[in-house]
Length: 171
Image (cartoon, rainbow, N blue to C red; front, side, top):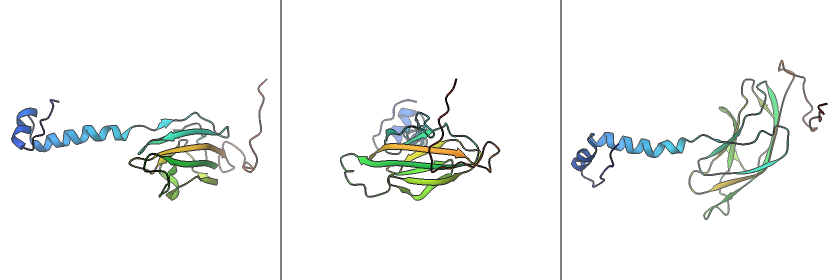
């Protein structure tokens, strides 16, 4: 693409780029919008493991992919807070938690404490999305998740999610 001369005159846009003005604007819009559709940050897999801390920029997300694909019950907890000049006090919910199109908390969550959320079979990616779209970065602290397959899954028995998973020593 050739650089565009934005003089406000359609004839100069056409003369510089060689394309009709409406196409120029479409190309400019597409080149600006493309970076907004970036992939989610990949978090270390810690299913039923230690807490982790991370930040999500406006319009951003983070995800974990170490969850079994079978039907499972999930416990998820975190503490959220916003940072930024205009974000000292959050006036809206900070994040959503999703397995594909199945999201917990219709309007979003502040410091979620989710217990026994049913995850459908076939999904294994948990996505944490910020609901802030402009200037607020969301700090997620003490993020833990534990998804354990249950009896309706062909992969294992019904777990007791009130207790931590047993430790297994490899010899």
